[in-house]
Length: 353
Ligand code: AMP
Ligand code: MG
Image (tube, rainbow, N blue to C red; front, side, top):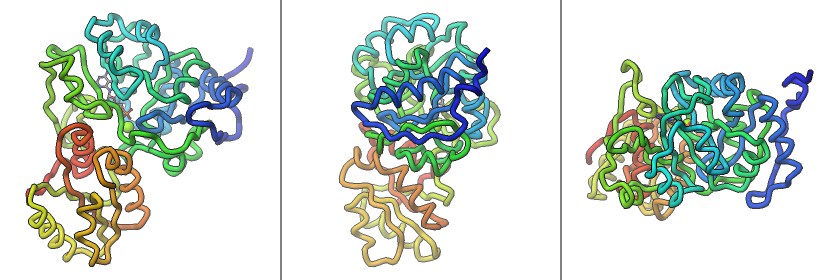
């Protein structure tokens, strides 16, 4: 009988594929690795994921090992067809159907009651499962070819910023997975929105690529209470862990509508420190042009900020800064997700200016 180790290539493979029309031969190689229990990193429209056969508890365990992710943090199962949701979930309520019609494929993850087929380690022992259908030709082709849902958290070392390029994946995980499908930078740059339909009324667990406002058009009573817990809190709910998505450097997050006051507060912090980096919009960055500090510009609008935020954190870590200053964005649309990631990187502390 063939062993998994016979079909997973012994040598790591980095396959460059077209983002819209990936080569079927390359996809077949990656799908065979998934079927054999291997770990394949692949692009989605949000960030790169580290994928394994969702039905295979051994392969799923490999994801936790490679990432250094605690077993208490459940994974999202990625699907290519709606029928796969019926295999993952015990029951799919009408509201879920409506959300799928409206937002799939796309950056919306639904939490539903899990079916008995789902391995316990995928859901961290919970009786619910998180699933989504990604809007990326490479991800969809891989899931289709593998013929199984693919469990895939972001392909970063646990608690590091999520990877928006193939290079980020290699920087964090080289040597710890089997294959990389490289289709260039991802389109959104932040993770999916996670929506729990097992709560009544439904609850937003993580803001992401689909804005809260869009979901409220379908679920007017949707609840969202940001919960930021300390790392040592007992049994935090999934997704509420603080110190997540974070750079190695300490990050201070400033909030205020008065530009002058915010800039003054930031300058006071810069003055007392030597190796400081800034993560700011182009407009805010212009106010610090006279200073000799590392600046990562997020761009002109919130979509560009989402796209560049994690790369900016990584770039400042590489530049060796030990303090990062950033400004909290407006909390509407995609801005809520950017705000959430920055606040987690700042370990829950906002500095009012
Ligand atoms: P990642 O793909 O790395 O962004 O992580 C997936 C996230 O999905 C986890 O950190 C959880 O917050 C969330 N998640 C996955 N499964 C569940 C579940 N059954 N219930 C609640 N949250 C979940
Ligand atoms: Mg993650």
